[in-house]
Image (cartoon, rainbow, N blue to C red):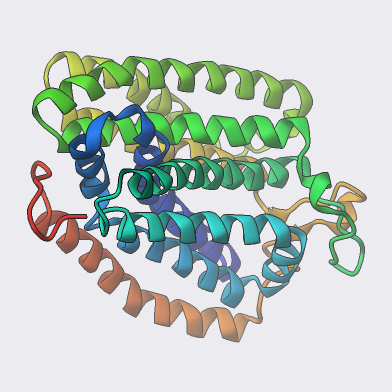
Length: 338
């Protein structure tokens, strides 16, 4: 295994960590308006309050890793997705502002505005993440100079939009399970009733996306013969989905949440194997594809950055683990709450 492949795996690990961690708080945000009353909405926000900003560190780290290890892919992606990234940035900013200022005033109209902002920005961010993933399958109009030659509307193909809605359904399922895990009483019972609906929404979108992918982009399974072990992750995905209702029926919400995490991890692993060794596919000419070799930094840079990553990643993992350990248990409202 060469350094290029190692960095491909490290980048995938960071994206997976972000999808699992920020996925549930985006899902909680997308479900926010289904809660009723000020107390329920404050409990919903405070379930992710101590961890949401730490979760986004994984996205920043993934962006830094992409810039350091695959600068050509970074430059092409950020030019091609420029407007989409600006929309994503505004969505993430509005989520953060809504969390911080929503309860600063008692006015009903004030809180309603930020409730809507929090929900809408969470939905938009989830869909945009999915659209980006869908375009990595469809391909972008990339020329021989590695430059994006299209417009924002070229990113909105039927498949990429489908993957965007699929990502939203995945995060809503993930978020509802997390919210059920963190709440108690009437709100927990209400959230328990949401889970079958979000799970059904996810399953419908999963089936549609899988059929579309296998029908229109069968090359996504070309690597399955070479990397036969990927079928284990396909099986893991199926078993994890099946275990969610089972765990909830047995009154084991943490196991249901772990199963939801496994679903996200398995989906991204299967996707990674499907696109390998491409970073960005050119829809104009396969010879223009950006791979983990022609888009990478020099071997010296990859070596130095790998050493830095080995030293830095334990701190990221330790920080994440400590935060979740400190704020374990059911969410409570106090004078320091949002």
